[in-house]
Length: 206
Image 1 (cartoon, rainbow, N blue to C red):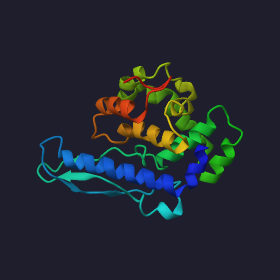
Image 2 (cartoon, rainbow, N blue to C red; image 1 turned 60 degrees about the horizontal axis):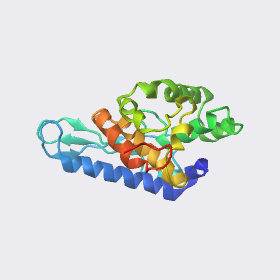
Image 3 (cartoon, rainbow, N blue to C red; image 1 turned 90 degrees about the vertical axis):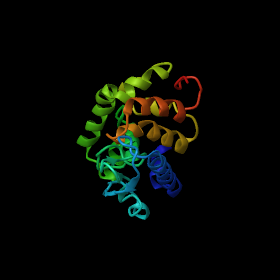
């Protein structure tokens, strides 16, 4: 079950490892504006829902500043979902439980200290706002049959292969272009739609 991953040290270590890989790939490419060298310029985060052992490791968001033009580049992230104060994994798991008024949704929300009104706001985002993003506009055609966003994120999560940890990590990676304004969402969404989900009935077509 996905909610069990919220207490899994292995899963949080995986998210941190993925973010480090994404950051290193972005740094190696250099500044997208001038090609200059990128230097680390991380900024602090205080994400809610983070297990105590991982709070220090999750207290910063990797970011870079160009040594030449001084522009900032913030790589994609599977830990943070935009500027939301909760970790991305919390947003996904809590929203899955809230979809369809799951009987344990309120209990999980209370455990994570997520107000019900916040869950409802997240649900509106999954159902209405996600569909308007360049990421989804570029990737939705690769899902056959189409994903019913009225049942998202559960309907999206089930399209990714593997056990609960692998599927959830793949979904977070698919969504990662949404976490950075400095990344090209349309192209990033297409790439992650192909890479994160492996072929099976109902997954994106390559």
